[in-house]
Each structure stands twice: as structure tokens, then as C-alpha cells.
Image 1 (cartoon, rainbow, N blue to C red):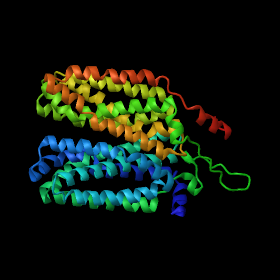
Image 2 (cartoon, one colour; image 1 turned 45 degrees about the vertical axis):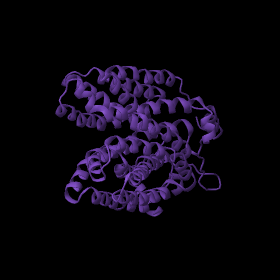
Image 3 (cartoon, rainbow, N blue to C red; image 1 turned 135 degrees about the vertical axis):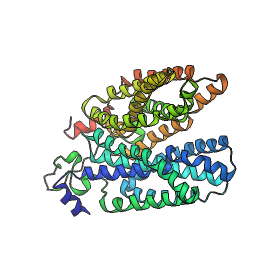
Image 4 (cartoon, rainbow, N blue to C red; image 1 turned 30 degrees about the horizontal axis):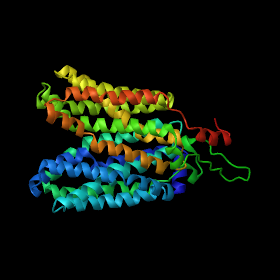
Length: 425
């Protein structure tokens, strides 16, 4: 494997192979993502005779429970490496898909939701972003943005594929084939192409020349704060609060988008056409956001993402025809691109790589927790007053406060001290 990697590296930096495998991993996480579940919900309700409220409650609770397993997954990634953990997660995700297709009641369904969310939406995405963060530094933003395109492809492929499988073999057998495809697609490249860090095979991040000590051995200096040190910085909590808000509010808009637009004057057909517009804008925006993170101060790009969140909420509140709906679609597409890229980028940027898994796991737990409760404010408001507009405008205050706090984001002094001690600026 090392020989193969070094042979490829003579032609092109091997980190781009890692990006391709990580993007495939994000794509394969599709069975654990909301856009795949949405195709199955009606069929599950009819088969198991479960109400929509019960099903939605089980999904939200399972997502929340899954979130609290991510810090432990992050520590395992630090201890065992993302390659080994990806093999385990991929095997378990395939088994979880097959078991979910055999669900016989509410409890089995809830446990299945939790397993799929933890393994797909949580663990696969955490491991893939961890890999990219080790293999890239100066071009980390762009590499993560290419990885995130795997999510866009999953949004385009998994819903129609799932519907086709349901039509052909039924919803239960469809989950068997989704599980089998997980193993077929991801296990071979993970087993034969992945290496945890460039230093493991004598390379350096971004394809730079590896630093060599005087005795001829490779000098492996990887900096980073521990989770405890990170938690004692204001930087961690500014980032966590901002990402919690982005995850919560993006999920809320996804969940209620059709309902918001139809209650404000659009037809259901017109409201449905907004999804592909946002997806296309997201695909275009993601590499641009990655480039911006590599070229401009991180705190400014993070503030920009929060301002786009404000634009998404306010433009959604102001939709009253197709033109205003398109303005919202563009803002929300950029919003999705920012959120996907930020989650992988900010933790290694501010806290280094040495204990990255533990820090990423905790950060992702906070984000997934936000996603699990995201729809509640809009649901409560609509039940109370029959409208979303005022609540959307009030919710925009949250990212505005986070944007002001983000202006004060700074690299923790402890990390700067480590880097300066190694002769780095």
C-alpha cells in the first residue's frame, strides 16, 4: 500500500486520492441522511401503522441520542486512526441498513434511526473530514469543499435511487441493497488506498517536502491542543455556538421549506422546484467557500457564513412570489455550502491536528444536537399563530449575535506557542 501510494505521489500529490475516497465516504453516508429517510417515511408509516408525529419524534430523539456518541468516536479516531475506524463504521453501517429494513415495531425503528444517524450522518462524516484535515493545511478549505461535493451527489442520487428500489422490491428490501452498496462502494478503497496521515508514509501535508531530522529520520511534529485545553478557550465556544445555530437553522429551513413557501403564496409545484435551485447553487458555492477559507482570514469567512444565514431566514420570511422564492433559493444554497465546509475546517484551523478527533467529535455533537431540535421553534410558532414569518425574523437575531462574537475569533495562544517552539509562524 505504501509503495502504491508513493508511486501515485510521483505523478500527483496522494492527498487528492484521499480527497476522492473521503468524498465517496460522504456520498455513502446517504442512508443515514435526512434526504434518504424522507423517501421511506410514508411507506414505514403505512406498514407499521405509526403516526407521523410518532415517527418524527423517534427520528428527532434518535438523532439527539446519536449525537452524544460522537465524542467517543472522536477519541477512537485519535487512538486507532480514521482508516481503521472507517472499516468498522462501514461494516456497521451496512449491517444497520439491513437491520433497519427488518424493523418490526416502534422500538426497533427508533434504535435503527439512532444507529443510522450515528454511523452515517455522524461517524462517517467525522472520519472523512478528519482524514482531509491531516492531509492538507494550506489547501485544507478547498480539499474539504471537494469532499463536501459527495454530499451534494448523495442528495441527487439517493432519493431517486431509494424510490426506484421501493418500487422494484419494497421498502424493506431497499434497505438491504442500500446496506450492500455501502460495503461494495467504500470498503475496497478504504482497505487499499487510505493512509491516516501523510507523515505515515514519509510525506507532508499539501505535498510539501517532508521535514527530516539530522539523523535522517522523518521529523513528525504534529501540533494541537487537547480537548480539555480547547474547552477552556473562548474560541471553542464562539465556534460551537455559531455552528450550533447554523446546524439548527439550516435543518429548520430544510424541514419546513415547502410549508413555509406554500403558506406564503407559492404552489406546491413551485415550492418543490426551489430544492434543485438551492442544490445547484450549493455545488457552485462549496469550492468557492473552500478557496475563500484558504485565502482570507478564517473569522471573516465565518462571519460571512453567519450573515448568509441571516439572509436565508429573512428572505424566507419575505417570499411572496416566484422571484422572491428564487432569491431565497440562492441564499439558502450558499448557506448550505458554508455550513458543510465550516464543520470540517474550523477545528483543525484553531486547535491543530494532534487531538483533532476528540475535538471534532465534541464539536460535531454540538452541531447534531442543534439539528435535532432545529424544527421545534418553527413548529411551535406555526401551531400557535398559523404563520412562520415573524418567527423567521426573530430567529435571525441568533446568527447576528454569533456574527458579532465571531469577529473576536483568534488562534489560541497555546497553539501559537507550540508552533513557534517548532520554528513555525
